[in-house]
Length: 220
Image 1 (tube, rainbow, N blue to C red):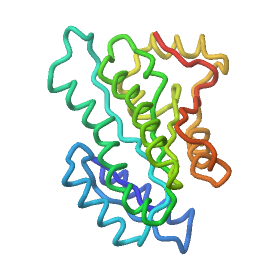
Image 2 (cartoon, one colour; image 1 turned 90 degrees about the horizontal axis):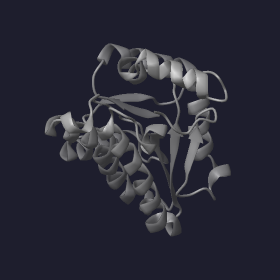
Image 3 (cartoon, helix red, strand yellow; image 1 turned 90 degrees about the vertical axis):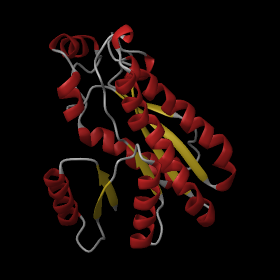
């Protein structure tokens, strides 16, 4: 297993240690990567392929958000969110298409959000997450005949660093009051959905956006 990180080297080291304890005898490596940079994506992805020989599943989950009403969003904030959340995912998928095609199989899993339907004050984030649907469905139609699937997860509210940084008390209260499950999601539930889409059981699932949101697929 390989994973990438942009910042927080100490946290990445803890994840690496934990993964190696969970899977003794398995190769697990971490790589620093800025997905906004096409040349860096190519270099790091090639390094991963050199280290592992092949790759069967690619999960694109890099994400940032910038809070602000649309009329006040700066060019820099807009470009940073779209470059990280959407363009970066495209760069990664594009680079792994060739090895997937060569081996005749592969899974792309794109992490989207209920924010894809629009969130007041987070227009750039909403646009980037909506774009994940088009990316997944485009890849599915182009490469499904080659044994490659591309799907996405539309996640609800989970306790992550991104949600803690950007969700207001009002927003959290709205979620807990209106979500039929009456709670936040557990990270194990998100990872379980990823494992399903990565499995052979999901080989006939392609171009889909699977909601993992406790029954609430919109936010204010």
